[in-house]
Image 1 (cartoon, chains in turn orange, green):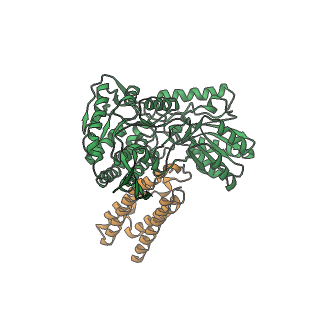
Image 2 (cartoon, rainbow over the protein chains, first blue to last red):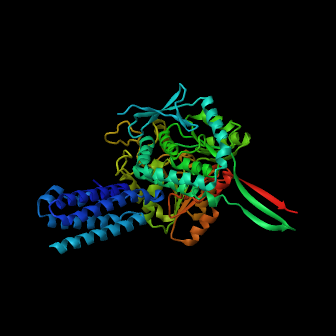
Image 3 (cartoon, one colour):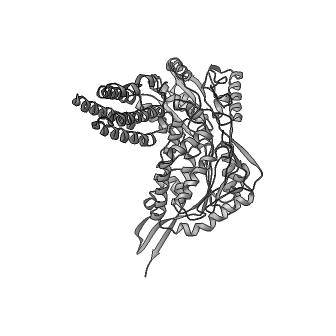
Length: 133
Length: 485
């Protein structure tokens, strides 16, 4: 599926953070250091839901092209079954790429800025995970 | 599919079922299915709404502005809380895309936010010693009962141009939304009910032409706000003014976009897509006539056809949809007749949206992006408002020729210029006689603190909606000159 609109990208981001939250909650049952990751994903999802309302700029709802949801898909079930830490690093790597690539295509500056910030947050998450290795 | 609902009126703080036996079906434009029935409210019901608004005016106008503002803040909170649900209702009854509906709700909220500033906005001014020991004050006061007759294309935003600022400044209000899209305002009135206004401050009556006409003639109504087509806007202005009311009546448009040879083709194409095909062309600020100056015509035309042919047309409820259906089967037929007339009159059809089909929505009112070239200003498609996703292109020799075409149009709602030249940009904004001018922007939509209105036959009246114009429309300025012995 192509991510052809502002709303489609925001929806994908919200679902991504929801999936992160579920993933970290699931692996957090086995290793408590992941609980904080789930909480932060939930906070980011709430921020994105609010942002979908607040950043939308009716005057410049311009079509978006060349972005595909499939480029950012993760096999969550497989990720949970394999090494949780390695999976979490992979999940964060994909999130960083998602926010970096899609943020650059959103024609709304406020959303673009927020996506850059979210990419940085996921870089931080990845660094924390790598410190556990 | 859920059973269609019967739309209700809201009068004197109560939901009321109309006693009318006549109804208009409300369709979901993406499916063609009936989702509601709008009552054509009776004369008595319209009268009751107006008289209840009149009865509550005095008490409401004496409520301190800070208290009124508090209600407006509460309304904003509730609209924010119900943002997504309101956006989806707009999509369901209007057909526009979810992003467009969200954009509409956001703009509606901005109008509410503007109105919340009423304790400052409503302040007057004064000057001491205008003559020997004489002082002069200007005070603003509320006027009375206002009504708004609003269109289908922005069921929430346009009502919000009027309602929040009218009631914030101490007036009472009767809203009559389009019979084609009554559900959004029903939801808004549920929120107004939750805010808890004094009974009769806000009222909702549903109906069509008869209800509107009655509001124009009702002696207890002090002012009328309207948005719609030019013939109706003229009728509203003439009738309401004849009956002694203040009127702001917004009519139709044929917005011209001028592309200079130095414009960035890629960026201009993207902006044109939004302007020409956003909201399926059903907006008073939609671009309709594209005048290319000199040799940019061919590259821009190619780029536009290429981009427009890739637009994803479908149900507005799908996040990836870039263009939704038009409002009704009748609108679709009318737009097709415009396209047919363009062919007959000799314009060259480059992209034909008439055969557009959408999977799983065989009965939806879809028309694909349509592009004509060689459209002359005398042709029907070159001079009349189409209100659909039809772009008319014409290559002109010079900037001045483009300005002449704009000047000869009876409409004056919006005009936009695409250029890298500051000189041409200034000339353009200085010389065009349109209420809304865009520079490198295809949808020149003023934000809530700026007036929104056209010129020539695109607007009848003098005070526009939004901004300080709306404040002046909804208040009286009284001058007090005093001398004390």
